[in-house]
Amino acid sequence: MANFINHLVQSWGLAPVHYWHLRLLTALLLTPLLGVLYVVLFDRPRRPTVGRKLWHF
Image (tube, rainbow, N blue to C red; front, side, top):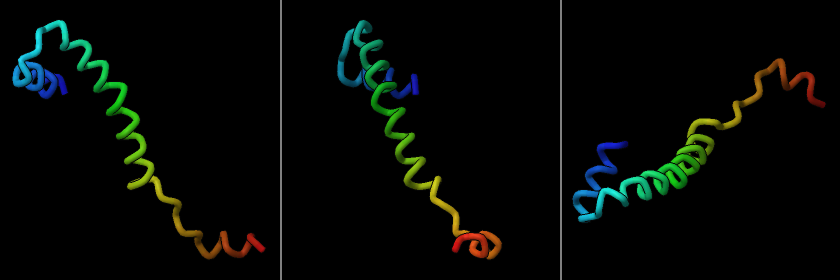
């Protein structure tokens, strides 16, 4: 991720001072986005098995 941020700083012509602002902004925005994507894509409820269906009336 640091390489990507360095690339953005260089390609946008930003001063080195802006590196930390961009890094903080990336951490604040990217981390929750990845968490939501994980929940949506990978943390789906599993189908109940036959044994679980017997106990739920």
